[in-house]
Amino acid sequence: MSLTTTMTDDAQIVKVNAERIDAAMAIQFKEDMRTETDSGADRVILDLSEVQFIDSSGLGAIVAAMKQLGGSRKLDLAGLTPMVEKVFRLTRMDTIFDLYGSLSDAIAPADASS
Image (cartoon, rainbow, N blue to C red; front, side, top):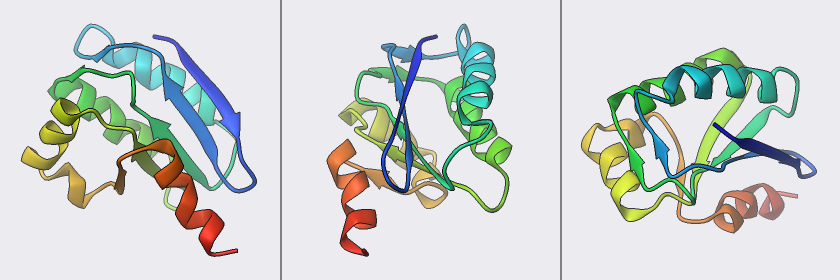
């Protein structure tokens, strides 16, 4: 699992460089997310624009990553492809996470408030 991180003024952006987050990758994803977000901004944006498929293990790994951040930090999701977004909505995970159509949409609310 390859993750890359960039920082903005008030958010850490973690990009998933893989087409799948599934049972075969879930444990590695959780470990990599812990490493990437161990210390960072209060807001983490997970860029899923390259992810074409996610299963229940992948959903669980993203929820675990959110929990690893603790209560004072926030995990938002950006760039969901139609299939991945459908999985989040069908499982009602869209009530847990803020979903943004693109990375620029995810960054815009923080910029608009300043």
